[in-house]
Length: 169
Image (cartoon, rainbow, N blue to C red):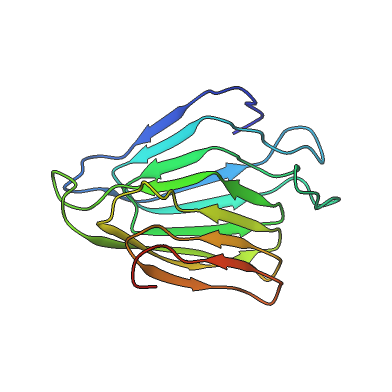
């Protein structure tokens, strides 16, 4: 995925909700050296159990406005693994509940411990109360925020900002 600074949206879909694809690897890396991938829309990936997200391309700077992605990530994953050398920012992480009608509780594991850039992961406050999150940050200064369903936040070695939701965190 290259630079898409508008409110564009991208959608990907695996086989079926009942038999999702095992995994999808998505690499965010701008063609231009040391340039980030500005994506202000929604990245919607459905019917995929595991998302492997690689955030690369901008290693020279760590300012707050230089990062890959800046939109909403939606889908029905049970696991998201984030690696790479570039800061990543989710304005909203909104994962669907399980079941054919998205009405069954599930836990989503987000692991950014392999990311050498910063991780800003915000689980939308309005997200489903049927979906709880277990989020592990990087070794840098991360900002991790939970929703009202409860969950767990694990910061890395950096000076992390961890914000629990209204649930049992």
